[in-house]
Length: 216
Ligand code: 5RP
Image (cartoon, rainbow, N blue to C red; front, side, top):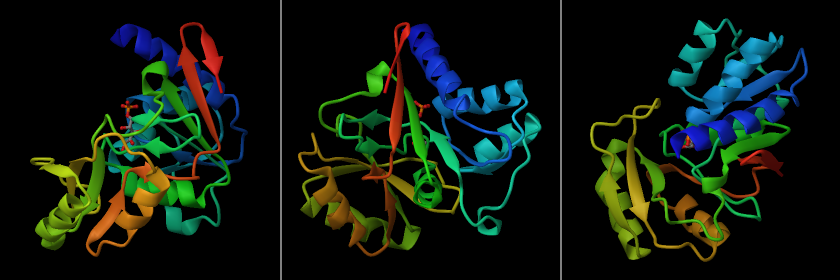
């Protein structure tokens, strides 16, 4: 199963790498799927400047010889390739299994084209079978948990995990999410909640490997 998933991730990564042009500023996602595209960029010798979405991705890019820029030193990001934990046909995303969703969302907000690559297990009719990651500042942890409980979620603290911004992650179970856009707005209003893994209207394209096919 993992071998098949990896094949699909790799196939999607190759298509995505083909969309990148020399000279572009490229947002580099985080996770096992994003890793395939980062390796593909290096393999093809694409002359890009990368904007990494995590320390983990930055380390990999440096190891592979991909030049990086600080996000605050670029005016725009031409294209970003990232993964997702779940996506719907409407291109709503649930992200953050790897805990990098705050920086991933900032990069997605600043990019001209957000391309998501995934294996076929990530396509769902409704988001929410995967717990929704929520990044909180440590001081607000209990308060945010209480607010999430009021919205009907049960939360698990991601034990021993600290984000690149020094925060904690709660994995929240809301059950299947009927209206992701409405939930995202409610979550945006909670003080101390820094980011959540719902990406609404941020993805431009999803490239999904499925068997030998690519589905967009
Ligand atoms: C990290 C993410 C990843 O894109 C998501 O968790 C998917 O990871 P993988 O490609 O390893 O399945 O959002 O914050």
